[in-house]
Length: 440
Image 1 (tube, rainbow, N blue to C red):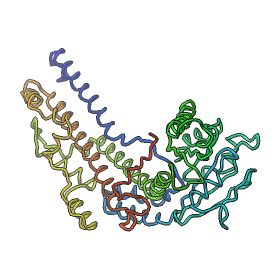
Image 2 (cartoon, rainbow, N blue to C red):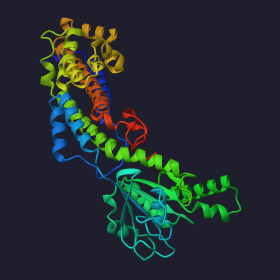
Image 3 (cartoon, helix red, strand yellow):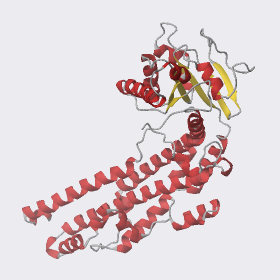
């Protein structure tokens, strides 16, 4: 007869319900640990090659953080001369060419200025450069609305997906075409601005005082965007005849930061997400591979054996590459010795996860000791192995989460070449996340 069936039915049911509830709780916690950051990020053409992505993944799978940082650093150095493509679009007659000239701080009469006029002057996409924005192409696109062409066909013809950032120009009114352009940019996850030009004309013809007029224009734009379910983008009210007044300085600063983000932050975030994914996959494999955790358990399991769990912690840290020895090697390679002291210590585990703390509390320990009494027969082995395995799964989750944060810090601190930390960004490497890559 099965040993378990000799137990009182109510007692057995109680123990099984406790086990199921605990397993469900741990499962939901594990999912939250491995889910990672689900924030929405902008897309651009500045992506890493499949070979780089594959090599990064292999290095993470090997637990070789030093190799991961080395690959990422080389990739970031190669991005320093990436040409950022910016498209300026909008309805015909909104002053896109005038805006380009004002952004470049050149007059309409200069030789390389964009042609302007009352009639439609831009028939084909035209590319311009500026010494204020090195390695940047400023493209003026033909205006939308001069023909019966739909927004969808316009975006396809203009190959809008090939640009890294879009500037939507508007004046006089914020039309349905502007809203459709903004909707398309949001669905494509493209960085885009809304720029209201010809502010000088508005100020000269409006009966409203300047503060009220600016507020009215901005309110009108926001209402149209909200009606189209478009999240608020960066908005600037400017006059092309006054390129150093109104919102033009703020526009240039924002543009400089986003150029930096497109060139460095976006590909670095992509590599970080690749690392997160491989770390999550590795954690999932270790959690599900019960044979791996069982060889770390003692032959005769006590209710709570700190040596067993500490041995497991060190083993998992070594697999993920965040043990003391690995971090010391990374610290020596990067010259930042504080990295060597970032390995998790066993006494920190209980502070980091309340479920692990619960599974190690005196009440659970006493419960397991009660099961050790001989008359419980084989239930001892079943329950203790369950609890031991769940403890190890929690530790694996903590180590995986710590590996993600450690690697992200290392990539941010060491992958960017020192000479570009301030280049065109207005902030050091810690400012990588200052200009958010998600819609807000």
